[in-house]
Image 1 (cartoon, rainbow, N blue to C red):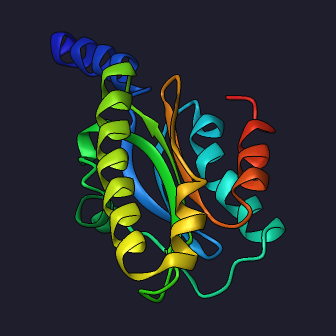
Image 2: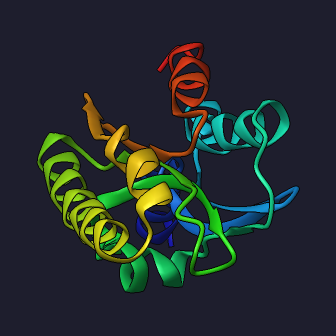
Image 3: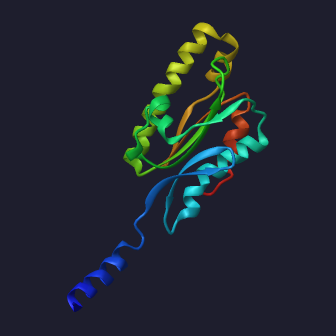
Length: 169
């Protein structure tokens, strides 16, 4: 009995800070979050997107769910610690904003590569069919900043980038 009790206490102590992933809704956007002692770090992605929604002139934007992370962007769940994203509801407007906190540097490179492939596809589509949108998309870029990766496509991508950099990561 003492052995079992010791094992349970040891397990409780060792397992106490293991994060468990889930999806939470924060206002209008879906945020991938992990419950841990470092929740504040995980909330940064959602806060950045919330500020973008509040301070940039975007219309008809939809939240990107965890399921859409792979189908729209090709980003695998195992590379993502946290993320938040919004994109235009219609197929004509190419506005979108995505911020991903990767699991580690290697995962950040995988996320960057997936977002770059997504960006290249949008750039090509807009060049062929939507010249006005092409100019906007052309001014955007996929950026890897440590374990964070972001892509802002908007007439206000400079303001979005400024919002991103206002957070201590």
